[in-house]
View 1 (cartoon, chains in turn brown, orange):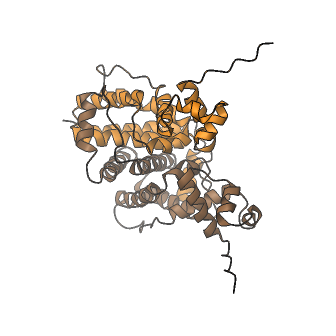
View 2 (view 1 turned 45 degrees about the vertical axis):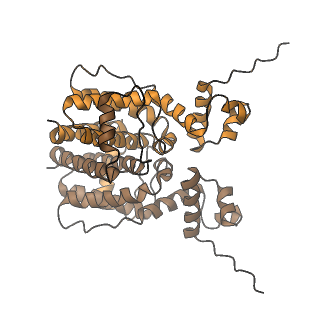
View 3 (view 1 turned 180 degrees about the vertical axis):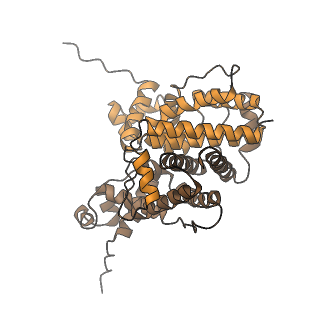
Length: 202
Length: 202
């Protein structure tokens, strides 16, 4: 009887296994990763230089779901909103990955292409280089925070005996709203893009 | 010679030890926590019902640094900005804690009081209950995402050979800027508050 063939170790398999650990535990170690792949740590090192590179693989995986629109056509706000929305959708599936990614310098090729597109759209819209980076950062921060909100439990807050009327009313009116998180995200990204336009475009 | 007296276990000591583990590993388990406190897991259970309660203790700890301004006086935007800034400062010290908190229902008393204050200020400014919750969520998401940005390495992005001019220029102009993250946060929160005012206040 033939033995089951050992699956080949690949960058893709490493990223998948690491992402699974992070989704579950918020972190991963090389020994855990080797164990979950049924390989030795040294076989992982045959494919990647270390943990930082695996983090970049996971970043690329999360960003690969983002489809870049044609940046030369149409309204720049719509283009940025389209990129931001697909970025938000992708990250809200992996909330525990977010602080791991933000604590490491972005070096992944796929991810850098998304920022290239954003920067180019903002340049066309008239943002000077310095405010361009602030605009990218503001959009980025809002997307990541909103992705965490989208991954929150349905009962984000639970009022207590001391809760005032203003907050209790807001919870009563808003918490059960269908697509609550998506609506907040869309409202927020529109506010931000309008505000950026008014203040910083030529 | 007297033996060193064993420090008394308290909610405060539990929160401190758990926060230390989360800051380092992005997560904690009851056995790790017991070990770091040199107590048994069952002595921890004498103080708290379980992990969820410890997460609320950490939330309360992070929020306790927030000083609530007098909400009846002055400009509502300034009041919200003051709350948001002290919230941002506190969370940027504990980035790994953020997804752990957002994945649990907010039940901590101190934290709920901050949201009470925000809701009251927004009500005074004229926000209806439904948009009040969206406004709180938008502010919250931006604060948390910006706190992650503030905790990022100085080189947030590293351009590669394929990077376009629009992005490279933005990095060149903005990445070394003194107080880069704070400036982005302040610009962003102002944009958001102005946009909220224009659209949703009576």
